Every structure is written in C-alpha cells, then in structure tokens.
Amino acid sequence: MRLLPVVVSVLLTAAAAYFVYLPLPDAIQEPWKLMMLDAGFRVTVHLAALKQWLGMSHYMYTIRQSTEAFDGFSKTLRGSESGGGGVVPGVKVSDTDFDGIPVRVYEPPPGGEGHLRRGVMYFHGGGWALGSARKGSYDAINRLMSDELNAVVVSVEYRLYPEVHFPVPYLDCFAAAKYFLSPEVLAKYMIDPERVAVSGDSAGGNLAAAVAQQISSGDSRSLKFSVQALIYPVLQALDFNTPSYLQNQEIPILYRNLMVQFWLQYLGADLSLQSQLLANNHSSLQQSAFTPELRARVDWSVLLPQKFQKNYKPVIVGKGPQGGAKEVPGLLDVRAAPLLAGPEVLAKCPRAYILTCEYDVLRDDGLMYARRLQDVGVTVTSDHYEDGFHGCFSFLFWPFEFDVGKRVFRSYMNWLQKNL
Ligand SMILES: *[C@@H]1O[C@H](CO)[C@@H](O)[C@H](O)[C@H]1NC(C)=O
Image (tube, rainbow, N blue to C red; front, side, top):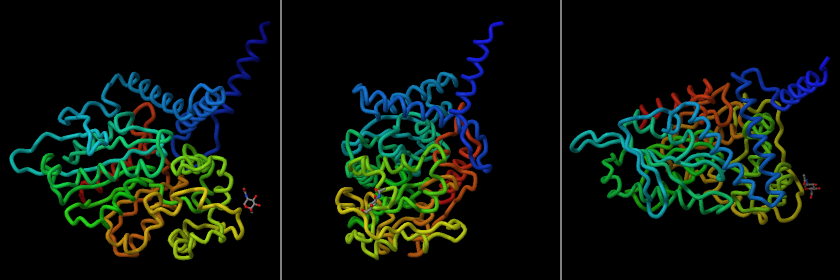
C-alpha cells in the first residue's frame, strides 16, 4: 500500500488549512473569502521580507509587484481590460498632470452648451505606500462614479513611500486640489464650482480630510470644496490603544502592527520605534508638546459613544522614554493628523460623509472626527457598518467581491448623489 503519498497530502492540506484559517467574528460575512485574501497577503509579506533580507529589493516593491500581478490575474479571470467594473462606454479617460502632479481624469459625455457637471477629486488608499489611481479597483470605481454621478472625477497619482515621505504625498494632493479648484480649470472641464467633492479611502481619506481643512482655512475665497466624503480615514497617530485599535488588532487585512508601520514610514521615522508606538510611549505625559488641549482632541473616553467604548480603558503612559515626538516628526502636524485640528479650523470644513466599519482599527478615528465636526456645527453623515471590515470598499469585483463592499459603495454613491 502506498501510504506515504496519502500521509503527505493529508499533512499538506492540514498545513494549508492551518495557514489560511483565522478565527473571525461571526458578524463578518463570507469569512473564507477574507481568509484567502489575508493568506495571500501574508504570503506576499513573508516573501517581501525574505527578498529584502537577501538584498534583492525593497520589501515595498515586492508587495507592489504582487498586488499588480494579482490585479492582472483578476482581470484575466474576468476577461476584461477595463480594470474591473466592466467598460463604461460613455466615460472618457485621460492621463495628464495638474500643476506637475500626475492625475487620471474621467469625463462623462458633455451635456450640451452651458450644461455644468459635478467634480470629484479622489485620493486612493494603500497606507501612503501602495495603490495607484490607474490600477486595481480604483480605476473601475472612478469610472463608475463619473458615469453615475455625471461627474468629472480626478484621481491623483501622488508619490508614495519609500520614494518619498510626509509631507510630500500631502503636498502633491494639495497642489493638485488647488489647481483643480481654480476657476479656469473648473470652466475648462465644465464643472459647477458649487458642486465639487474631495474624497478618499483609508490613507486617501487622511489626505482628503487634510486637504479639505487646508483649502477651507486658506485665504482664497474662490477655492472651495462643497463636500468631503471620507471612507474609513486614518486621522491620528497619538493613540494606538483606542477601543477599535485593540478590538480589531488581529482582524485582516489592516492589522494594528501594520497600521503603525505605515505611520512610521509615512512620517519618515525609524521603523524600530514600532513597539514604543504600540505602547503609546510616544505620547506619554512627559511629551510637553502634546498639550492637554491637543490630548482632548483625540480623547476617545469623551468623544466616542459609550456603545463603542465597551470596557476598554485609556492607555496613558506617565513616563515614556525621552525623544518621542522628536523621533517621529510630523506627529503633531495637522496636515498628517487632521483629527488634531482646532475647532476654528474644523468649523470652516465642508459638509461631510464619514464611513466607518466595526471591524477596523480605524473605526474610532472616523467616529471621533465625525463627533468633532458636529460639535462645531458641520453637518455630518456618519455611516457605520456593523459587518464592515477595513478595505471592503475596494472589493467590489469578482473574484474578490464582498457583499458588504457593494453595500458600502452604494451607500457612498447615494450620499454623493443627494449631497453633491
Ligand atoms: C515604554 O517606556 C518605558 C519607560 O521608558 C519603558 O520601560 C518601556 O520598556 C517602554 N515600552 C516599550 C514597549 O518599549
């Protein structure tokens, strides 16, 4: 009897199942799909670390190559070249630059003489290190937006880590936004100046919130966004022990460690500081630059509804190591952490849509921002998904389509349809 092959295949199957299986909360639907996605991501991260260790390439390049290969593979499976959502025939797509920043512009068919359209400036997510306006689901999503909203959508190809770090990605987005909002450019694209949105997901939501603040508190009265639509935005780096950071630290695909790593990379800090940040040592009471006034702006024990606080206790470190804020430049810069902006800045911000997911380390960043904007009189639609997980907005297309992703996308589009 040939027992060995049977034993080997049983062991291999068990090992594969062990690697893929991850206990997930019951509320998350289609758990196996998420586990497969997560396993693929973990394999990539291990491979990337190995290649960097062998001196072959920066790990971020390996991760980028893999996501592009995955993208190409999905397209082949779908048999479509349009990026995922199928061809949207009426939408004209062109690559150009706004004040030197590469952008992809999606234009709906012109509606005749004097017929103005909506405008949307979009910043993609990916931890300020991954993703592209031109690739993956972003291209497909922006085509659909342009078509359904009859909007000129401008997706910005801001520069990423490791090529650059803060403030460069922010400055790229800000420059593109200023250019887009100028009367000449809006006129050229036949856009109604009263109907221009700024939007983004995850790290793109961070950039959208920061750009919205800076534009609305700027001197120029002619430059303004009418609304901001933020999808699970990243908004602060002072407290990595919010209830959502703790509750969801092991939920794919944005693990708590990974988000801290993205922050250190973005701010150009030493990656070995990760454990200090996870312990909130970087925002200890000894850090005099982090004043009580600033602390109150990220104080979830006040800003978060009780329902989300559960039994979590604030992690406030009395004595951390010296350095802290100094070793992590930009930590207190509102252009990096929009939740730290003062009430006078927030009061001038445009009407907001803020989407949050229960199974997301960034849930509380979004909920606190919604509350702070509301407190100063800004109209906010806070749209919370009890079964949502971080990244679901990007999974709308086969083979990695999630029902919750489609519902989130519909809800976002409905809000823009009514409010833009
Ligand atoms: C946090 O800071 C304290 C005081 O310097 C130190 O003893 C502790 O090891 C630090 N924690 C981490 C995780 O680095």
